[in-house]
Image (cartoon, rainbow, N blue to C red; front, side):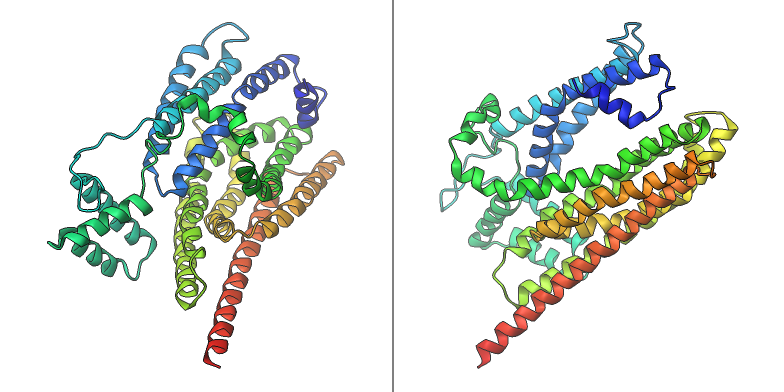
Length: 438
């Protein structure tokens, strides 16, 4: 019911074509039907990544993307205003979301088939091929995450795998079960597919609710703070900039949304690896492991950012021609390239910093920062709107340039906080060792 009012506030332009407005309104209303599924999908995906299981969400989301594509092909060309066009694209996305929801429910609650039912000495079922596959996967992870000691760790894993000593084989199997457990069938013994969606189960578990309550306000504040900049950008572009700049902004934001997930995944990777190290017993080994992990992640973030900058510089002009042939619009898109390049160039480091802070449970800092950004970023964006309405030339280049400054500031703050936390951890270790020596 609030969709019309919110949409008018976002557009901020009373001269909008009623046909365009109605199409946008139908799209928003239909897409809102998929929000419950989106929440469950996001939770399931985060749970899988928390167990270092990247295959389960990959399979499910790839299948959902196929449903979305098929739905677009069948529905968008329909002549009905509620089934075709923008509404058809919205229905296709909703269908794919609920398809992914059903697939996740089945994936998590249907038990994984065993390749071998022969128990070992301590009663665990031996699965030789799974052991080889997962151990090889562990080697790959170590090469990617720990550059310096990858060869050493790979050697240890090979010795454990191929050694004739039976306890070593059991040790590898236990390691696989505990540290690299697959999400498939994880809830097979305790849940049925539809029981996961039953809110009464959560209501009966007060201890579970208490565990999640401390995360509600920080996570909600963080999520709202992230989107405030994007919403205000769209508002300024639609309400104050000209038709050409508005068209160019739509092209720029579309290309940006295609490239951003390449580095945004680093945030979830850091959230998967850092908590395991952070939860160790306080000591020198833990402090060293946190330092090495942070440095290696920073290298990966910088590498990803450099690659994305190269892609932006070389691909955006070419990709823009897939959206329009208007030379004026294409020239305006080029004005946005520097801002997009700066934002995505720092995005890898920002995601690594944010994921590391989340992995170290530094929620209060992130909550306060994003609460500040929720007001600061829109205020600077709205200044551009006032300048444009006063007749001062403000184009898409200034819009994306301002947005990129926000990204640079955020990256510096996140990495600075990570460095400060590392120094504090090492200082605590020094104090512990000094007290122990007395």
